[in-house]
Image 1 (spheres, rainbow, N blue to C red):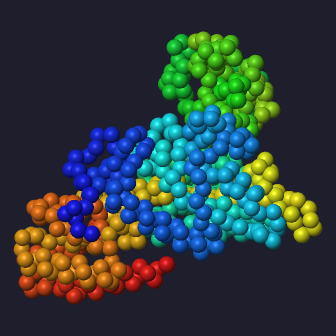
Image 2 (image 1 turned 90 degrees about the vertical axis):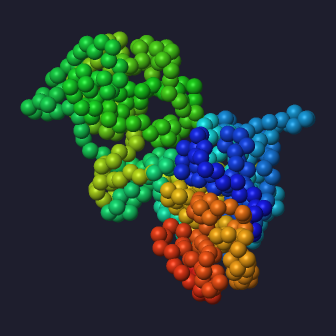
Image 3 (image 1 turned 180 degrees about the horizontal axis):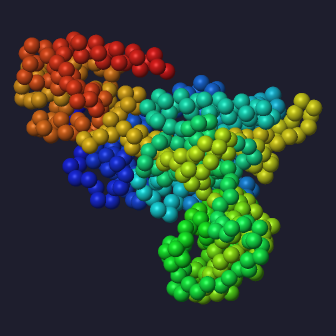
Length: 578
């Protein structure tokens, strides 16, 4: 492609509303443009990267014997009612009616649609197992779209679905996808990790793994053990419990004889304020939080230095909806003011985290404005009937598997695989007739990759102060030829010759034939991030060029022939790597 008329509108200034590096660079380098919050147009460079990502995904999916289909983005709402997800999915599901008042949704995912399709087409065990996939735009009404393509309302996704007659078949399909995802992300040049995860709104009966690109901007927290290799999303991660809390007495046998004691704490409502006011550490406190679960208020007790894991709590309660109660709801449900709630004699159900339950003694709210209680003993002063792991793992906690300390890092979810079992096949009546003539529900798995999110994740990991550093495998072009002066006939003849030769080799080449200053051209080249830059300058008459790889400080002087051979070698190595 010749750059003179190419739609590559680079920007010198950083857009004011772009927080993430990938968002800033994709805008500045002319890859994307925002139409509305969370909705983007892919300009030619962005579309070329997407197509290369899609090609990698297609190749690896086809190797698993998955077959590509394309399903409608517009889905009848009755399918979502049949699966039970219409209410569960929440406001992120974009709902609308057609002119006949029939309700539809824009697909954020396609479990219902694909299950109904296979239900109507497959009825015998002889036609199974089967895997189908598609690459398509999805829609989710994100409350707060941010970070450009990392959290958008319209995005490109690959979603695959497997159908089997047995759990052994599900396991085989799951492992095939697990392996394929490793190959895909390796080919994209990503640093990533597969972690145990929560199934969320997709649900299912078996295991699930998220694939996380490691980067500080990531909205997800990854919990890892460097000793045994354990890795999980924070929503899922657990740790080995240990006893902690107040034990400032000479003998623990005296604790049962100490009655809880009311202490005045005027205008002290937060953990931070209480720690300072009483000169204690947060792990000596129990905080009691009020939630509303499916419309019903409940109380949750957790140690003062810990945070409630709302995913664990929601799963433990088998709740569809969970949210923190507001001050009015708290007062109505407990009869006490916000900031002073404690676990003793609460009139609502009480759920206690394991670590809080194991404390010997603690300070809690007194359910009375301006007062807290000390010497509160779990199990004596309040019930431990409902006790579970309800907290987020913290840095330095002990691993469940080997007792080494856990480490927390940040990551971007780029893929997720699930064992669904019969979650969709049973309500949607997707069955097969087995060898004995009996009807059985199909067993399913689903497997997603956020392709547009991949584009941003790569940029988050691969950039410097000057711009993007694309891996060779997905770069919009392999080579950027930059003649210093398009008015110099000798330079342009050599540039055109290289352009033609490299094109015949199968390289994607961008020729900067703009009448711009050399400094502008070189800055744009760094910003756009093409892996190989060939500058044709004053030594063009000698057949010499400057060869520079993006991200390297070293520039080499090569002959045009040597440059052509280097590109050919790079192309061969790339072809042989997959």
